[in-house]
Image 1 (cartoon, rainbow, N blue to C red):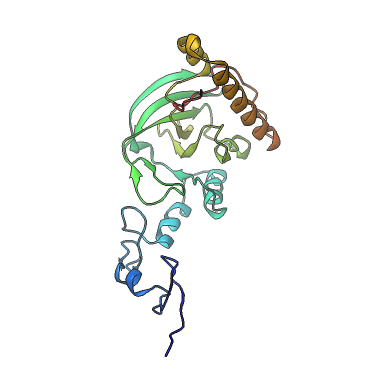
Image 2 (cartoon, helix red, strand yellow):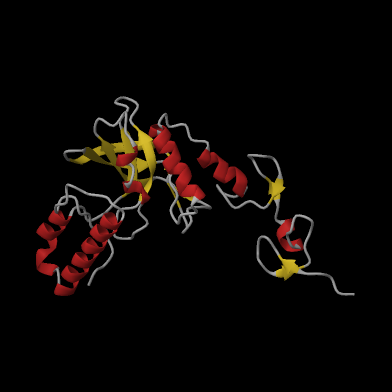
Length: 237
């Protein structure tokens, strides 16, 4: 007698399934979720949370600003490759200012809890990660017009991990990827003799692609210069 087989909800293989739609092997890996106490397959936060509790944690945001709450929730509801999170300011240590501009101040910091590993930002955290904190000046009453920057999926634009807030000034903060080579101005000053024409063309192409994306999304940068263009450690020859 043949048993009906279907795809396992975890491994995806055609197997005879348990009532929870998992095969015998995947079902045996289950343990209790620390969030809801259900016996389910765990994949998040060092295998301690189920998918429902993991996502709910991000959706229960209380930043004190409705636009920011909606921004973070939207990044999860849309199933974007990179999802934002609300980051408590106390999670940052070793904060050092590296720049300032008309609209923001920029700092490096160590994020003790760290960024989430993986293409969909799940599973484990990269603890004690170096990040950039972009503090928006006079932003305690920030509105949605300032919140388009973290939404970019483009490789040519600096990745934003989430939003935080300085408890002393109430200014909001974008938590962003650290670019190890600093600004384009600094990069050209220290590496100009070693930069080939191919590297120059690749840099120019990436700058144009980034500007093209923000214009297509009806965003005006208003302050593009070599100090605001950041270079990562990727080899560009």
